[in-house]
Image (cartoon, rainbow, N blue to C red; front, side, top):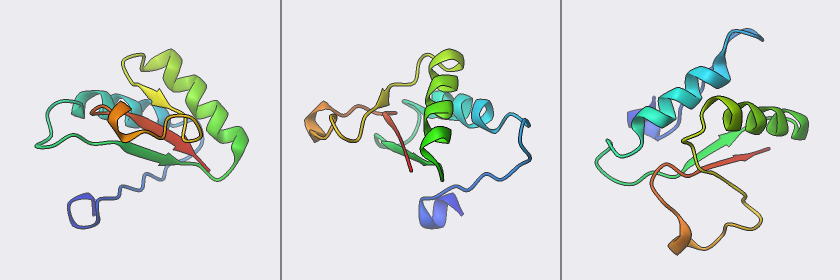
Length: 86
């Protein structure tokens, strides 16, 4: 699915470690893909966005989490930047 559409959907039970698994995968992919990538992580609720952001800051500290409202200048983007939104 990712190669054909550029999207990945991860579905698993609550508490199974989805955030950590995907966060570590994004960390591992930075700098190894053929071109720079900016990631968009969508969650259905604002509270889940906050929970995800907090978990990634704590557990995947090499990710550069960006803010879609303030980090809008393309020249400021780097490979592996991550936007987490609803």
